[in-house]
Length: 170
Image (cartoon, rainbow, N blue to C red; front, side, top):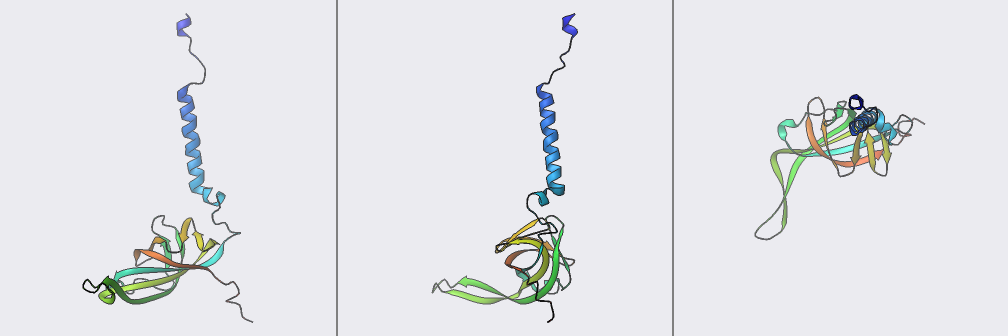
């Protein structure tokens, strides 16, 4: 008769199920609200920043693919991180080495341009780096952005906090 009695205790499978459940809850909390918990941008600490990016080399047919006023999205997350405030194009300059003299040579590469795009965003800003809607930015870092007419990898050339008094009239 004692063979038919079942243990009502805690076993290893119960323990593993509890661990998996806790890990799943922690994962969901982090991805839904966790960014704000671990120091991300919240409404109180957000500042307006200006981010400059350089895309080079780009084929010349992409010349007008970004316009002032376009929304900027982080291509990896799909979240909006800002709005384009300035766009400029210059000829792409190729840097190479002259094999016979060993000198550095710079020359324009026909059919290619360098795109410099500036966008404004609300972010947590500290010491030249920023967090924009969950996206970490550092100067000289690479970020893949998307607008309505463009997607590409660019180098972050500057991150600056906007002067809050710049737009006020005296």
